[in-house]
Image (cartoon, rainbow, N blue to C red; front, side, top):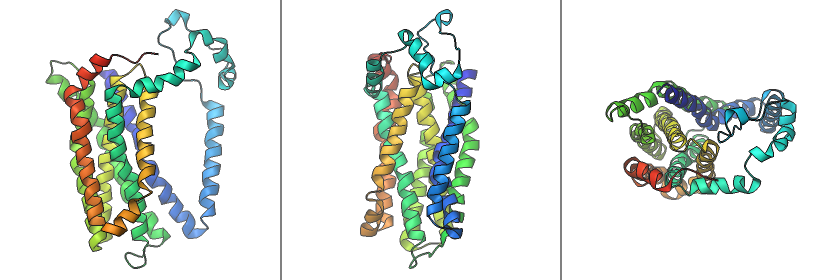
Length: 325
């Protein structure tokens, strides 16, 4: 259980950066635009990307480790520079999967029902992170509504940032608590499905948050109500992000890269698709109705995707077996 505890806490820390990024960017950009021009937002992004690349080149190392090869037969590491450019990996290619198997493996992973259902759930849940973010910035800066300037909008983003940090703190113990409680009630046996339990605690917060934002924007309530709403939603999505990642990683420990990639794909697909119609939907039907539908989708996603995993997830995994290839 100690290993599982460390795993969930590291996933929780990693998830915090994922959830924080959609709000930390606009938070910083708002103040940059307030004092300079929007071009400096992109200049800064290019500079930071270049710094990250240089840091990776200077300090990062190859993380792949083939557990199928016995320890005594593992290739000896010689030079980080040779590994950085792939020469050392090429020299030990006979101990590594073929290019064909590497291309095939992600599709073998998504063919597993638990991974596919997790992907779908996260797609229909994380989509509203970007959707709400886009919608709130448009409505708060509308001169006929709240008339926020760049500085005001930047300060508003403190609400989801604080919510993320609070969820990070709570999640440090929450995910271990639910898993340990599950194990105690199942004769000290741990199951990956125990990782899904925090989702049921987070879902009411997300639904309440979306509804609050929708009603607040529709009836032009005080902006603090909207801040509380977005805070509740972000707190919930932070808990959900850790839970769903911990679940797929525990369910398929032999394919951590592939299952994480599919969860990230769900986040990206949902987040980018929603921006095409989020604002137009709200302007056409009103935020109370459009966000009410989105809140219903969040609840329905739990019923359609998470509950089957909770009830039949173990049977699915046993019937389909481990990831091969």
